[in-house]
Length: 614
Image (cartoon, rainbow, N blue to C red; front, side, top):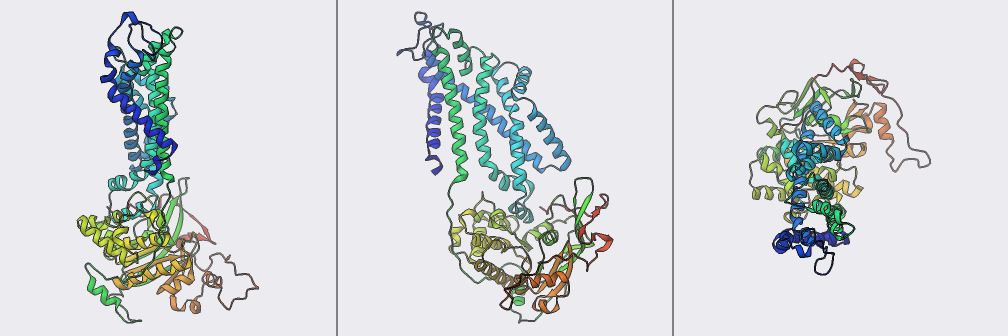
């Protein structure tokens, strides 16, 4: 409510109250004076008895203006609703359609948007006739292209966020993503646009009625009253100025409402900083086996560790280059993760770390072309369409921790709503059970008062707490593999250590394997069992994390290690610079030439990536 305690907000509330009062009370209060002729008072000038004077039949013009408020506002609301609802439906439909139907629909809307709006209104008015209903349909339908473009652009920007990808990985369907994750996040600009459109719609109705193309006698709205008053502008100016003032006042109110709604995004954020540590007890199916694995002494290999939990072989990922071809970004990568193992993937930006991990999780972008000899999670073949029940397994047994929790968590939903999604979608829990499980996960990752914090929104958490909440979300199912995509990049060193401690506790308690992606080879080598070094879309070396300094053989790995200063570093000398091209590894089919990315023929698509199963 604080956004209303401002000059624009107060003016919007008062103006809306005046308009609603006139619309509701107008016909009952001024109906008699507005309709009963009085010949003796015809064409009376404005005065105390008749504020706007009278018309040629002696009817009070001010009373007619008050009575016309209901019809004018109803027609405005109807046309605005048609435009907004049509724009939302067409825009969201375009956002979920395949590539070519989407382009065709957007092109049609863009052509209509390029056509002069007023001419489009007049064209539609001719089709449906010069009536109030015809004018409402014409104005409403003419406003759909503008709203469609806004909704489509907003939906396209939101659909690329990490929290939408996280919703897909837990099995939320396309309609659930649209109405639970996308629409709430675009609601505020839509409301602002709707209020602004109402102002334009009101003026359009007044213009059509003034031109005798809108409301017809014996009905009347503000535009028709303006038309009637213009004939006596020299004898009674208020006969035309009165309805004009009312139209301007209503348009100004709608504009103030839009401004007050726009202020909603600028509200202050309460920052909460708290940290804590707690032990985590494994739950769910497989609890005993994972607890035994976690309790195994150092150096012992958990039972079943010889078989890879997840693996890819000869993974290649390409993207369209805009010229009909494909540019390959990942070249023949092979990677396996055993149960309970912590594997680190390290490399510079653009080396293909995240692309490889997302392909392993079946979360590659829709535009990516993914092909591989093998790509599986447990016994689920990710190169083929998922069988019945396999999507549910992926949603519960695979957890994702994205790089930026502020964009990975849906800002329009509470933390509790997001942490209960997996439990209610896949585990069949009711609302109470799901909230208890979510609170337990928040408690497990060190967030105090978890029951109360479930009601908070992501912006009410500090950066470290948001990352902890993301880890808790990854643990709400029964994860066997957790993919952490640079989870400590935006955090300070102290919070980084806390987040890694939470991940380590989760791994020990559940026995889940972890794939940790990072730029920091020191962080990866200190946290992981095995380190995979990538450069230019290819794996250049795999090393035991405990002996990475001694066993590093590739120049790129040695360069990454050399860039890490320690207490023995000579501070008078600059740090080494990694500038050597990738020459030790030559992927098959000459996909990499001296460190440059080669193009793949457009026809050689292999297995195209698909959205995560729903």
